[in-house]
Length: 135
Image (cartoon, rainbow, N blue to C red; front, side, top):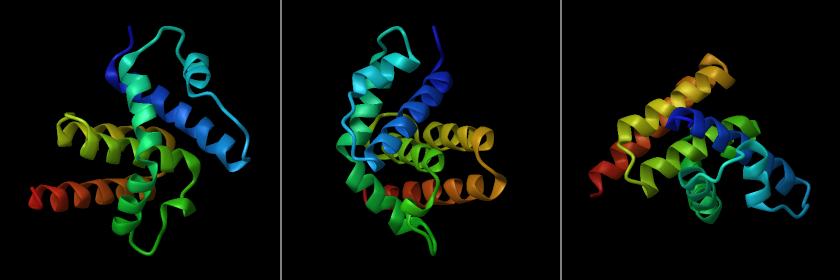
């Protein structure tokens, strides 16, 4: 059984594949992509991936709002995937904010460089503080 951190890494890999396929305008099956990465059905993985896909436009709009002099589309697909997971967990799940931010940062440390990690941290932190003030 994988822990949540390992499952988030699988989510990131699945999202990366989905983003690559979408950019080529090919058809894809989310369940098949998940199954390629994870042999056993996992509700956390499928719910998170499907939730991100469902809310992708809102997630990208929110990312663009807090990215300084950048748009999410300019980030590489791995970084886009990590940022989408963090924003989704912050805004659409009961995951504690500190956990959502920290998990995204840890993924970024593993797959990106220090500048991107700082940027992702800044975006998620700003979203957390701005959304917190609107509640």
